[in-house]
Length: 617
Image (cartoon, rainbow, N blue to C red; front, side, top):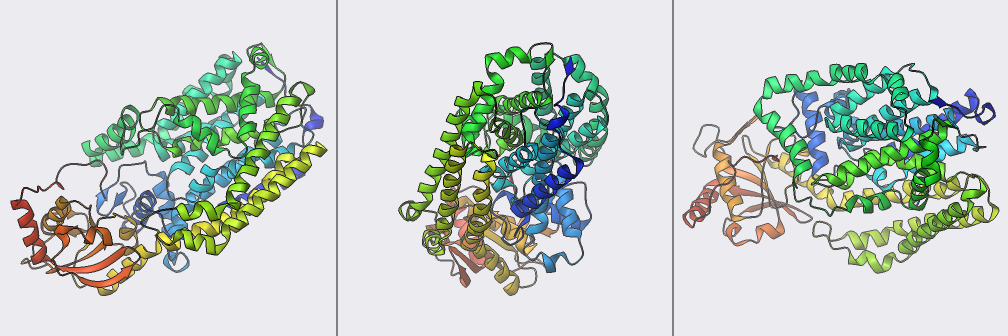
């Protein structure tokens, strides 16, 4: 199959390309890295990732991720390695006192790299109809960065943004090899795919393979694609880089690693519902709409352009007029592959859609270009719907006095009052209102750069409203946990164990940097706690009976006020050492705790902590 690239008059000079990339880099750093370490970790998953990364840096064990003295087989090691490098930097605890900059940096940089790759791809391969390819490139990068999902996960210490970034870079390298018609640097895509496998596991290979297979089918050019990307040798490179860690981990940890990583976190998540993440089959249809707001109409238009019968007929023909049309088709195959795979999975989470956001950004930017008269009316309708959605969001922010008081979170009882008093929601309302005005003005003028005109105020929204809102939420929700951790460290006696009962926040372990025994709200939790303090063993911590040489007569517990009022916790005469939000730091006599546990066991309450559980911390 022949690939005809855009005419030379549509290309941009190397200097323009460099300036475009510098602009995208500046925007990416502002959106992704500004005040990145200014807030604490949000429970419950991010502290587990960050604690595992920091443990690698502290212990020197870079093979097995560990949290709270237990192996964590949830994800492969790349995200932990990158976090660990951040925690290994000199004087880390001085310039990163909350420990969140190092934990979040891999996610932020992965999203910045994705923005740069999206922009560079659209500048190197512009459309013949695109008179301003650099504007299209910047718009695509911002369409990705302004996705609500990307805004959230780029600032979260988990592996989802890193998977999205590594997979996006790999797929775009694959397409660029195909679009140019030669296989120069074909190996780079497979090296990047290996990093995706080391980030999330074999799902990266599945998503890449589905995308390439759909694209080859649509283009009717499996031979040409195969020649350019060299999949046999490429997969060998991917395996050579990624498999050694899996083999080493299996040899060291054995069956528990196999059962947890492959059995639970991969196979079982796909075939059955885990952690109560049951969602209807159409769940990702809703996520598709929400993840691209307010530009979802342009995304749907981009998909419709690809799937329109005339375009499909042309796609299945023997030649393709432009590389950009091929990119639109590729992005559609990319997005549809993720939609199909995770729709069939039993466990469904919003974060599963994150790898589709770069493809959605391409479709949005390409659909927003000024094009021929044959699609002028659909484009006008999509623009009108985009501005309408932006207006609805603006009205929602302006009416914050109505819905903010309805927020009812027992862990953040003061949030509504503080959010209204901060006037941050009004800042958001102003930003979205300006976006509406600019959008209407640009539609009337039918000028180029309309997408950028609407995106500009939304960039300002993230910097002056969204990021401060995150800081406010941290102060209300997470600051009490940090204060409780500091209190425990200040009053802790030698060999005195730490525990948290009721609301289980792994960030307490992260901030104390000690093993914390976690139990829930049930009567079994009290019985479990009593027994674990005497008998449980973890790396770096061993429970001892009260009368043992290293035994402690007391235990420090963080317990929420609701759990403390339950009948089986009353009468233990806890010494309250601090009150922080809904949490109490108390010291309890273990002899009294043991007697209460014996009473509950006599009444039929059973120990449950020894029962194997796939998710423990």
